[in-house]
Length: 274
Image 1 (tube, rainbow, N blue to C red):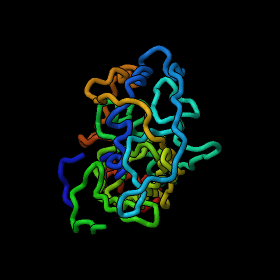
Image 2: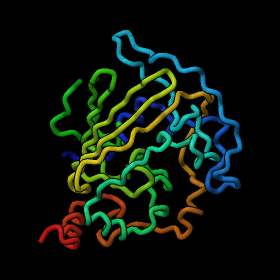
Image 3: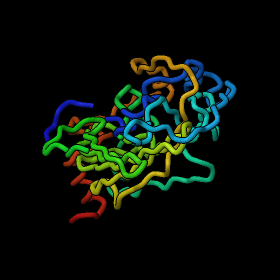
């Protein structure tokens, strides 16, 4: 694949849902880690409209447009981050951990604390969602995405993902870096007017022992006015990475991301190759 300077949010999810990656409700912008009261709900939950049948476009497919928020309230409240109402999974749903290859644990140990290494702390892009893929696509943070309808489900195939990021969202809160051969299959559906469902299968034979499928992620139609969101001066970095750790390897590369030479080295260390 050609290498260019580009950018990766998890696939088409970022395109279809202008969700909280771009904007957050005006009444939800308190509650950052650095603020007193973080994790304690302070705003009343909004009342959702009665769900109606799935709205459809002129061609008969579900209308997936709208502003969608993780959870069950149609808003995001950072002060209520740990409450069930803000969970991306339904009651009783548990997501399995990705089946990482043994060498991945060695690499994760090299850069240490996930909290301190999280790329979003320094405002780096978040990780990825009927035509054919180009023969030699340039890697992008959103990858090269091609979609088709399977009944009422939009299926999006994503390749050519830039390796300079971590997967977030469906992958959970875990240090998960893509290799240059990662392949995503995303599924989007809207069972009623209030609800949006998302599921992703990740196939990355260099990082995983087998393909991994997320639990179904639940989103709710937005009920709050939006305001601008930007990341240029993260005040929480002093608390989450108090020592200002940098992650530069002896070869001058960023240790947090996939590197083919290091991959081959750690395969041998982990006993996966001789």
